[in-house]
View: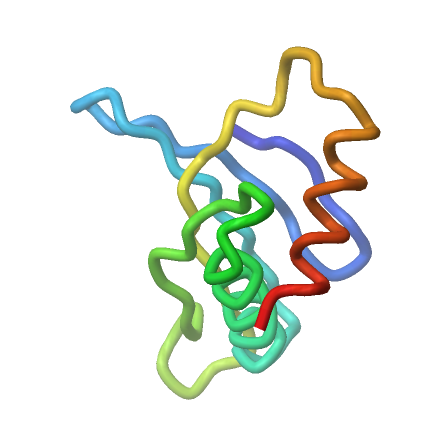
Length: 98
């Protein structure tokens, strides 16, 4: 399912027969380094244990030797209420984490 796009990537949700869902970003014109950096950043944020971020499952080139890349992440439901105050507190804790 197409979710949205930016100037450099498109976002999709994939629903598998077993009921699992994945969030996938595709970028036909970007080198894999773009999503590698995103994966490293998300993994560093996750390691702090303070802010809930999607787990990065895989990233790579769209096709061997070609231009383009992708990243596959766990799908998070982004609905429901959360307090901005709580997010601010979590972000402050994340920045204090070592």
